[in-house]
Length: 110
Image (cartoon, rainbow, N blue to C red):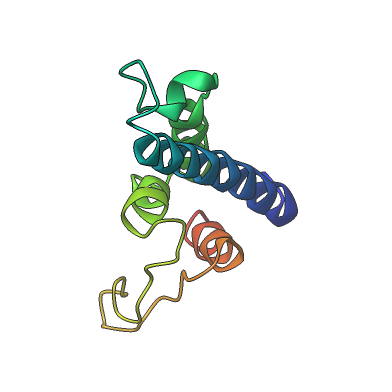
């Protein structure tokens, strides 16, 4: 099993690349008058295996698509709101950070 520290480190590295791509795209759009090409996708600047990493993490935890949901829909937990994920009995599951997501995944992977 992957350790919490390693899991969080991987998530943080994915977010770092994602933030870089978003920032670069934003800057390129602002310079559109000066840019003489159709470049508006910073992802093409880096070789990223994000989808494979996310899929492997989900497989490791037998987690379905919760990690990809947390990364893409909740934007690495930044859009987390209480109640966006609950137990069957209505108990709120706090996945507001990568650490809390890991704890939830580990608890439910028994």
